[in-house]
Image 1 (spheres, helix red, strand yellow):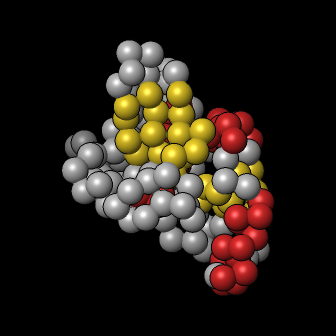
Image 2: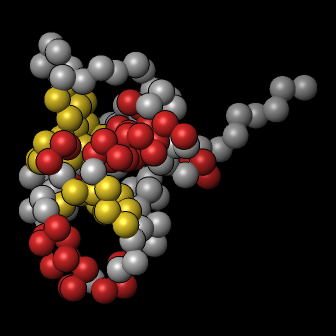
Length: 144
């Protein structure tokens, strides 16, 4: 961590607990600093076109700041709460299962009140609006 730049927002990935990864058909891995960046890129909100062969999310509890513990996105449980601070402000965290999420919320009750989604539900929701809040990307300068 601290070396790879996210292909969506171009930020350096500093905390692996929030990371996501897409692997293309040629086996090249692309690392994202927030699951929202990958969701938005897959939904065409920005970044180069991507058709991943595999998609992984960092398991928030099993990962450390320096080293992710990858979960296949299809098997992860996403938790969304805008009050949770994440690199791009999405409030998305990935967990291995509901029991892990409940243990986290018991330890961090201030994060309660969010909602759970599957990867497919998050992708579908992302078709209507980007996950990365628009205030993270300033508007383009006005041309006279």
